Structure formats: structure tokens, C-alpha cells
Amino acid sequence: MDIGIWITNLFNLVVNGFGSLGIVFAFFILVIFMVVQAVIAPIVSEAVLASAGGIFNSAFPTYGIAVAILGGVIGSMLGAATAFYIARFGQEKIAHYVESRNIKEIENPNLWQKSLIFLMKFIDDDSEDFAKIIEERGFLIVLVGRLIPFVPFDAVSYGSGFTTIDFKDFMVATTIGSIPRVTFFVLLGTSLGDVVKKNGTLFLVLTTIVAFALYFGYKFVVAMIRRRNAKKELIEADTNEGAHEETPSENTNVEQQSQE
Image 1: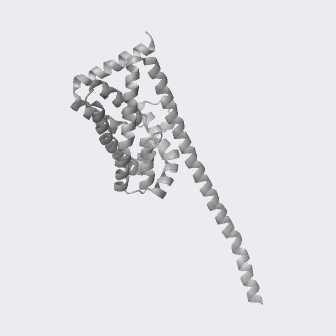
Image 2: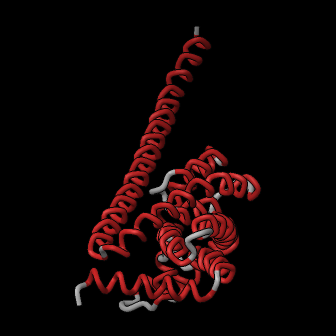
Image 3: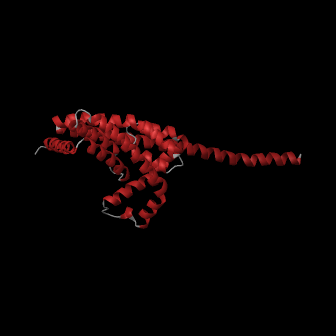
């Protein structure tokens, strides 16, 4: 069977399944799934929202898009709060658990172990960069991070939890930023859903392009943050070295004045 036809048939099968459940039940499934994906880090929230846009629009033509946006916003807020508290209160325990059991060294990790390894990337590497920026700007950085489509939603949530940012500020920024973000991805998914119903192959090509764009956009942001931090640390190091070099000369001047 042609892969394009297979994708179209699979999409129609999922749409029919959600349609048979009813819009209320489908709404709660979306909210729950958004919370679950925040815990199981390899599942990307952006993909969930885009999928919801395509599925809800096809399964419930009248109110599908509005319900998908509402469920996406509520689910994003709950998922963000969950990720925030996991990072804030579970960071040391997670790191100890992973290190004590040498999970990183396992050749064929299961899904749970892969999730922990992925989470450790935030703790060990990326979170350090996000944490520095978030601690410096707090509310504004979280808000901007929510508004930029190619900045991973969960990365900002976990990164915020590793910092001292106030939970109230975090949630207010998340709520404000989630509305346009969710709307964007739901409408994107709606357009992709219309494509997959007509041409599964074209849908596969478009989703691949979008995935690569989001991935490289994220990499660009991370690289930019790291360059900024490296430059700042270099300036601070030069300043400290300059201060140390000036100290002996100042002491010498004092000694000369005393001798005179």
C-alpha cells in the first residue's frame, strides 16, 4: 500500500474514533494528554496541539477548533505546572536516581529510562543556559519563550523549575503566552489535517519540513544563549583579572607615598 494512502486511512480512523467518543470526552482526553506529555518529555507538546487541531476540526466541524484551543490552553497550563514542580522539587532525586543506577550507560534503555535520560539533558546541559536567562529576566523570558513557536514548551517549564522564579509569575506568563501559541499550533494542525485527508504523501513532506524547522530553530536559540553566556563570562573574567592586576600597583603607590 502507498504510504500516503496509509497515512490518510490512519488519520480517518483516528478522527472516527474521537468522533464516536463525543466532543466533551475528547476534550478531557486532550487535557490529560497534554499533562502526560509534560512528564514524558520525548512527547512534544507542539505535535500534540497540531494533531488535536487536525483531529478535532475533522471530527467536530462546528466547534472542533474552539474546543481544541480551549483544551490545549488548559492542558498547557496544567502540564507547565506539573513540569515546573517536577524540576523544582525532584531535580536532585532524579539526578541521583539516574547516576546511582547508571541509566546513561544502559545499551538498550526502555521508554521510562529514555525519558529520564532525556530529562537529564535539561538538568545537565540545556537547563543551565535557560536557567541563567530565566533568572535574569524572569517573567519576560518565560512569556517570550511561550510566544516563540520553535522554543520547546517543556524546556521552558523545566528550565524555570530549576531557577528561583516565583511560581505565580511563571504561571501568569505561561497563561498569557499559551493562548497565541496554542492557537498557532492548532490552526497549523487544522491546515495539515485538511492536507492529509486529500494527500497523505504531501502531508508527510510538510510535517517533515515543519519538524526540521522547529528543531533547527530550537538549536539556533540554544546556540545563541550559549554564546551570550560565554561572552558574558569572558567579560566577567577579564574584569576580575583587571582588578587583580590593578591591586599591586595601587599598593606600590601607597608604599611610595609612605616612604616619601
